[in-house]
Length: 58
Image (tube, rainbow, N blue to C red; front, top):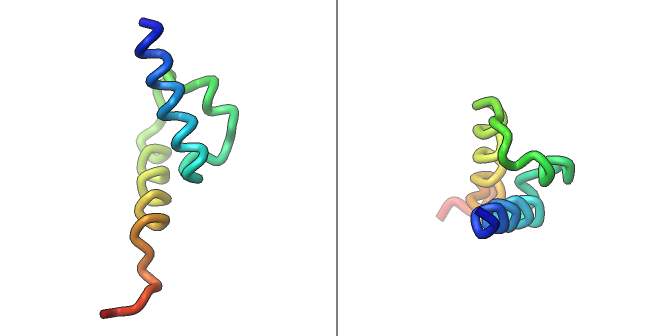
């Protein structure tokens, strides 16, 4: 199970470095369930970060 725990921690660190997770306290609670609104908010931040809508039209 240690390999799975390390994988989960690495995903959390990558999400924090990408700016998807703002609160570093979440790294201690990565295996806890979260509300759907939180997951959606993280996905919307990711979409806005990697697919900005304010660029050139063409």
